[in-house]
Length: 417
Length: 149
Image 1 (cartoon, helix red, strand yellow):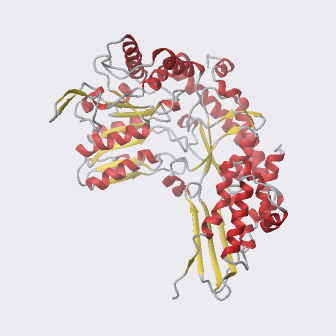
Image 2 (tube, helix red, strand yellow):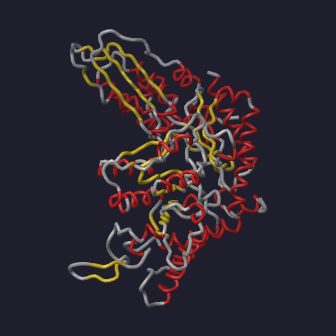
């Protein structure tokens, strides 16, 4: 990476935190990322200098807040390369990725899915990209089809034509798996969906923060992701809807902000995207998210991907060299490192992930243990839970090395009763 | 490499009970059963019990516990402790156990009542893992008579 990691780390105050007398090694980035001082300051600046409600206010503060708020919408559109975004911006603010998917399942799904239609999701979906479609299929008597995975937790792409067929009306698929680290071939999936006139929703919660994602190139119909996994604040999600689809959508929530004209009997809607944002939006967090996008742009998304790939290769090399780890643990995900994100998920017969996680925490190492909101996948793999270390721009080889050493020591600790 | 805090929790007694849980043999004449499952982590406790209806106490117990070592070890130790006890005494042990996890001072008599559960005292400072040791107690609160065939 062109940027010096030690310089980047200085921007993240929390990385100096001491946990159990050890310097924090934060490897729980797939759950949420840490925030640079630029984002924290932006949030503070908003509340100390700019706090005001957006849109329609005639006073100076409201105007300034509105400008900053709407500028971030433009920034996000540019970040994912939305076509013609200056003319009509199809970026809708939501609470998080989960809410974005739920909105589409209702606003688009209830209008377009009919009895016996098929919706396709993969076997590695987060609960948020599974349950909304289960409920939609229940409401509409439609069929939910689960695209299978192979032994390396990759989509069994040979079955593409079988699963995405003329009955398919929607494919809702994760770009990068939060629990296995698999990067799915979404371009291939989108191309097949286009052939059968199915819409495609891409769950970008784990890809947009870590690699370049270009909706013009992908030509997907929906892209959803969360600010908090990409250096931004919690409580803010993004819903991108392709222009020809967004024009057909009716609002799902009603109230202030989203209306043009209201009488006692009826109402008409504001322009896109505001007609989809009822009530006062999450102004402070949107504005702070702008600072996160600036930060990511400054480093460059290709550089971020390159850095994480190098760290992942380094981790895989350390694992490969350890006979003990190879004999006693399973590392999930693709064998081809270019199909992997910076997510490393393990299971071992020696100890339960929670016990290992407690020992790692004792060494200041923060990892996630559990089912990672992918219970059906864990059941399919025949494990109750797993241990996940996930990387980001501020992680170093030293931290990866420390994790592998402490993970090994933890396993040995439980091995010797 | 691990400091005293960790070693105190994962001490020899807890490690032994987690690896070799007590009361794992099948029992005859099952009168009651109990199940508790934590779906979030996959921990499970299953109890098969022979209950003495005349004297209102647990005669025999079979424990099947899966999951993390804290769950298995606590289930194992509790299954030993409750043998031959009635519900009132079992409830009392649980109350003292919770008192210990709340970092309250125990008198010597209460220490004795807890038996090997005393080794879980380090959990009082690891809030997130307390629940792992409570699954056995959840199962006990769900003990149900099995219907005669």
